[in-house]
Length: 266
Image (cartoon, rainbow, N blue to C red; front, side):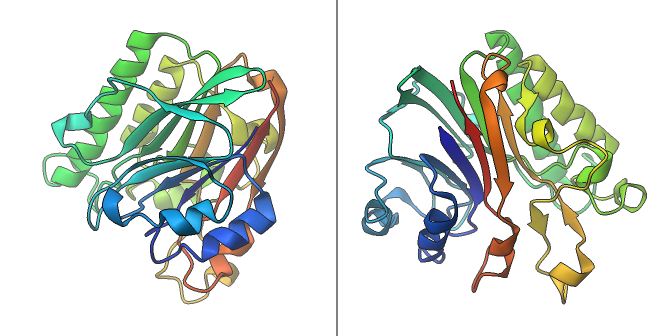
């Protein structure tokens, strides 16, 4: 199964870019975040034209939103949490029917957290930490993940070389110690295996996001790894390859995130 995660930053605005993504990566399952579209306006025709017969979406006007598009049959997992009781369309859990049996896929869009890394001064940062705390408790209650994949824009770059400068980023939302501790605690709670770092050693730089604020993002290369793919330990031996489609950051009307592919054989 080839699974791709991408914060598309408006699925209606960037629907034409999905063809480029398909030409480059040819995923079986595509998980989108920040679709910014209510369900009734989702571009189903454009997506169906790419061969995604199976689609489960959860969107809202102007903000957030997640979608799972698939060539393989999908089933929505029932009774998933309403994170922080906000109903803000940040998670989809589905079962994907593969030749080896169902694989549970969770697509997350974690709150970005604003600009100030202080939960008392910044409600957005508090929301981010509360969201991850709820996700960690939920995961711990379920036990170690089995035949499962968790993907998405988790909005945290946890490792030293997941950011362009560890020292300069320690006080910047997305790489602060409290966020890193929260994310790694969530990962441990499910005994998740980091699929990208399975292929790329921790001492090597690895980015999936480059800010719109950079005049020349490629020359500056001040990136962060905000997008993640975790797999359960039983799937880890089947990991075959990964690809971070950095060229997508240079596409016309691009997202500031790039698509990330992981191929796993079960």
